[in-house]
Image: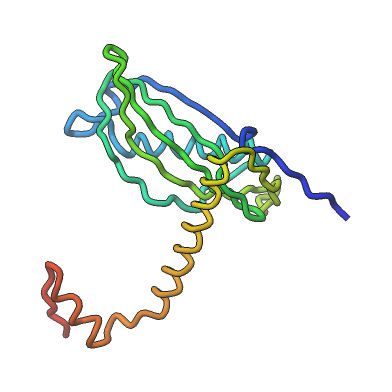
Length: 183
């Protein structure tokens, strides 16, 4: 019989900072969102692997809302930690801030949640340690993760049973910028 292993949220915490360069820009001269997503995926991997002691892969990414653009020359700092654990999965919360290093002004650029799955050396799902919550923020983050997980399950269940071809569903489309031309 195995004993259950617990780890603190603090054992998963990772912070990275990177100066944004002209090579990271999109066509409008702002830092490319895809570049920021790549960095977020890297820090999610680091936090999940650090916590689980295993290789981890990205299973899903919850909504990423880009709240403020990031400029060339700003210092981007990402903070990540495990907010929730299942049997083999972990939800990693990530906060992205940018700082104008000349003025010191800091902007919150986005927050997101990556679901990561631990893998063993053979590529099979690996059990992760249970979570010890040590303060009110950790309890709040855990509870919010549970709410998001339950909302995703409800949404998925609704999507599976929704009849897109029903007269009611088709009538509902009249509220949107579409025209039906069904054959």
